[in-house]
Length: 98
Image (cartoon, rainbow, N blue to C red):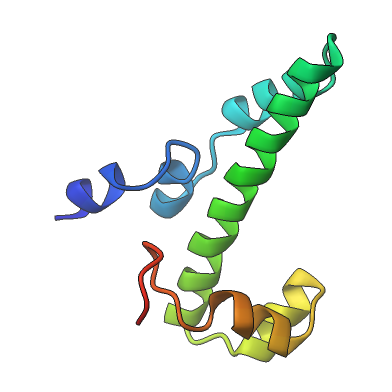
């Protein structure tokens, strides 16, 4: 069952969901983001942003499942409770409404 669930997750999130983040993938994206030409760097920057957004969704889901409050999660992210609840409150791990 878990294998099926993990296959549905983006590549960069799968390792986090299982325990440890793939540093090599993010390091490669960061290297590409600082590379020439600038358009290649922008593409890599956008990809890093998407991967970090996916990672945030997984970690918020894990935090909620482990009993963390919206206030605690908001504090960890450096945003208001309302902002984090608006962004993640009605969403399941795979993006559908709860």
